[in-house]
Length: 308
Image (cartoon, rainbow, N blue to C red; front, side):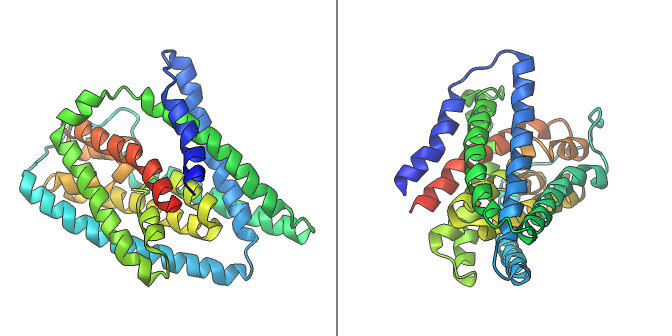
């Protein structure tokens, strides 16, 4: 199992070693990450279509994802409210970011598009199975594994060239405290949820280690534990982002650590415009540091727990 961990971590580390100074190349890497995510989620949908008694399995997946999400969310909110009272951090308003998705519908569009890709993969898989192509499910899983290696290398390159020096991360005590609190409370939630979902303790921890990074958690978990639990990881982390879009405008001025922290890894990208708009410019470095740390922690934690 440890050899499998090293095989998956290797492209991430190799990607992190590559410095990129050309803006055009970096833009290409970002597009490559997005394309790889869509391809893998499509292949995950095709793999889900190969499950026996698909309707019952999808219902089971939804129930497990809802239970996992509920337990982790309670743990996160309790811990982040406690941290908010300790830090006493308050934020004001600020101008809207240019071209930012300022409506909930616009902000949710990207997340819902990923759900549509998975659903489209299921439909394609069912159609191919009906035409007699059962071997497509094996090919889909193998192809998804290779695309995963490419994705991890690109993500490692993104993290290396994100413009976030280690010194800046360690000196931002608010972002660091929020990230650690979110990570620890999520892992506690994963441990609590594992026996309720009939999972091993390390599987519960792996599912809880996505920290909102639904595209990556679904891919890593699905590669090791199969498409069903990959789907659980995907919908657990996706629901976090959807709820974050609703919570941020409501609570960020009074409980900024809660609003920033609950977004998890997405606070450095997808939920950042909403955080900036409703919380102020001062929220941006805190959110970016918190999201960066959680993004850095998520892949190795998932892979480590799955290797146990």
